[in-house]
Image (cartoon, rainbow over all chains, first blue to last red; front, side):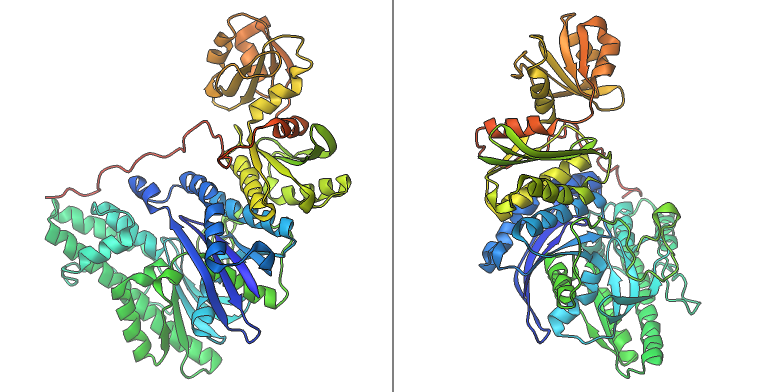
Length: 358
Length: 222
């Protein structure tokens, strides 16, 4: 089956065509991503209204490029999938409405995909991975450890209780006058720095919990920087290296614990840990996870960078997996700014009338 | 020529099917919000009433604003998606132009002002001749400023912003219709009359995104 996937939940306008064969294997036929980073750089972060405006101008051409690159007509598709949340609602609405219109006019089923499910299932597309496995999702909007048990069955083992990891990188970059996006900038600056110079906090390590907290770390970086201000290039390098060492330490140790817990729960001797999200591109984090998975006798899968960051292929693939199980949506499907993958997990972030964030 | 007209820019979710300027079926639901959930079901219902399928549509018209930023994008994104699937021309229609067109036949020879309430005591507004032909550009402006532009001359005023203008303009503003959306039949008529555009329709926001460039770095650098 051939599925068109549309992703517009943050600052990438993306569309892809993915094929799923009857044996469950998948192939990316076309994958087009248009980044809006330049539109947001001056603001030091993604501005929701600017993102929504850019999506509506760009999306149909991005879809046309994907179809053309695949040599596929809309009539050839078996379904149209789009991110329906969680994410910036203005952008999600653009992708979802475009998908609904194509599906209705072409007489194809619509699949309203949870963006996090797209990340969660990517390793099944790239590596043919079988359920169950562990997922570390680290992006600008999310930081979670999930047990991926089956299609539609995701158990949250841990989550950030404040800032997402990518957000912590962005805020550290902003504090130190480094450009947006902060992840690559901090990683670059950290390269020549001394990771042991500043003793930064590793939050929530003392407990059995697999939850994360990065808000205190951000404050500690600010205090350390202000204490030695004005900061030189070497100071910035040391601050970035120390910050990065702290987050890599926390994430690696939490993942080690998650592997042990997952093994105890499932009886699987050598579990697999999959990493997804934009922060997966960080080389220091990757090294920390390599060491942690080796020490805890697990296999590490890091999909290619272009499939770790937001993309349409993961949405098309999640749509294909759902379609293969007969899971399709009605054309009144709502866009959902908040949509936890594990609806049974207690909210740790975001509450009140809007419910848990993710 | 069979036309499908859509409007989700303001307080209504509305769909019409027309042959040229003659309406075959239409539905307008004043829902305020929830356009994204309702629109496709409404299109299906109106197509069914008209006894036609998507493949019969020869031209699509959609309102591009001014109006609610989100509502505008719901309509424009859907219409651009329909264009991709149907390969038919897509026309963007101003909500103000449609409002003026809707009252042109009954305006009694007066020049027309179409105005939507844009909050903060401002209106989205545009002036027209008595036959609905625009005589200026669309603007987002304080209601008092638009009222002054009437120059004391009687105008037929239409739209949710008309009463606001009238509070400053007095008798010159003859409020003839204060509905909060562009009548979908007028959107369909303007779609039928439009010259096929080269470019795809884009939202007509009239206001920039509310965002300020980043302040300087948090810590002093040597």
